Image (tube, rainbow over all chains, first blue to last red):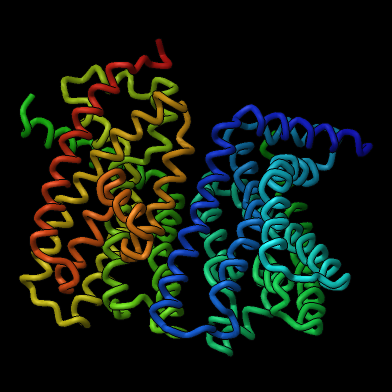
Length: 265
Length: 261
């Protein structure tokens, strides 16, 4: 199957997102408000603690951290799981499966098509604003590392989302699992607070898990709060996690595929 | 139909909802776990915050736990009665048509048949954390009862407000996305003292979106941060918000035309 078919899926999903403009813009607005409230909360914490820095983060660092996290959250999501649940619920999974395209890739590009607008309308502009505010001079290494981290993070979240989505083939209604997975990613990935704030031992464990790369590592790289060796270590660990998750996804999909086939008779 | 009939309808609807939940056991168990997990999530966040810092000025760790647990209870009580995003979908598809033909008030019908039964576990886990925090704070039974009374009035007012706003959302956007996002935001905002958001947002969360009247103000009163007079005023606002929301809900629903024709 040629790449044109997948480009078609991306185009279709961009159009579909644009068809629900109000919903789309409202969601982006509320995501921004959510980050704004985190900033309020952390401002109160810093003022209450009366210190200039907590675990290496000053208050302006925290503002920037959450700004970058907001930009990253505009492209990290569990859309694939919901797509999967919907396609199982309305039976379209059988139709999509019979198309001469790889089904997991169809799903991936469906999600990517929906995320592309968020990346362009929220992610990139917010990163530019964060860069302007921070007066940071990113080295070529930081920029390259940041891009690799974001790509790895997007791939890891997509595979996780796909894996959770596969559960729909067995239990159909999986929204609770999807939401729970997202909360875990947010908490353990630095969406609620930088991982530096966790006790040292827990922090070490979290940095070994695939969640750290989703928000914390790219945000810390962007802010220059993480050493080059730590960046390389995180990229390496995340690449291993991605390979492991892809392996699991391949095994699960091979079994799930047989399930779909038997259901169709 | 009188209040007794409405209560009977409410109880019968709850019975039916639980029978349905039991029919989808796996899904129900997963949702029960998720609702509990939401409280654990907040608990972890607050614990980490108070480990690395002094936390919010004037609020001890257990006071913050109590406030966030109360916020969870309020939101879960609302979700138990009305899941706004599904209500909008049902209104759009005419899912209430047969119910609206029953001889009960529209508010009674919607609040009896639109909730998520599994939210009960979130409410219970919030209650457990609330009780634990109250014990650690050595709160008297009297204080807890006063808190729960104000909390009850505030929650009821907020419930009517959410019902009205859900109907308005249907009228304006025909989409549940707005309410879904708004309630998610309220869940975060109400877990912390309102004064940290500045005067504009504090006023917003007291009068316009009255989430504070069920959480922040009663907590502020029993911890001696807010005067009794202020709380009495907030309670008066609660009653007013409830009454206005109720009236507005019916005014909005006059413009409702079913997707079913």
